[in-house]
Image (cartoon, rainbow, N blue to C red; front, top):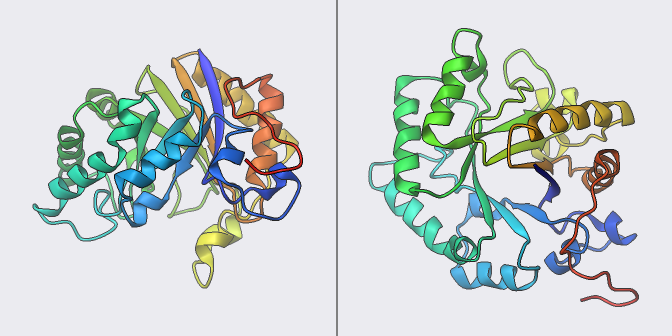
Length: 278
């Protein structure tokens, strides 16, 4: 049983160094053993870029990479688009895979990706194209969690060898999913914590994508999350917690606080440098 904690992106957490400048990946890796990379959602990087990332971190450091928007149907997908995009994505991140540093590919589905036969077949197709690559699913449509379907949803993920991303987000009537701490892959479990900014989550508009993660978890909320993490960690070999409440710079402080609550000491980090950048 192992628990790791990380953040979404490495650059947006200047509080780690007590300043206002963006962090490099090497600096981020002084504090946390895992990071979630979202840039591939927008554009698949060149393999040389990914290799450069790997060379900045210790050999045990792990990457969670968000799947490209075409793969998760955020963009229109044709029968030709999906296989070619998955192939390009895998080629880009093969270096991490070869070195044992790709913890998972995050399949974050759009709100309109609901529990239908068509979408179940699509999930099966994605699994087939990715082969044995580690995949974790974050649903954003609550039909997957309806009482009459939730057991089948979890069984589907178990069958496909996909882990459920346990999301924490504001509880709304229509555009959120519940906090559902289930383990569908005994190898690894994932938490993704977006904050609980209800007003920001419910009111899309200018700057909405930033405002919705503008939230700082209170001490009591972190204690509740710590209890859930411990419970899940008893069922999975590795449990990873990613803080995505980046908008106000709160993710790093919350992650360090949770690390303290869980009594975790991360080893195999980059050495801390004093007085100069690495």
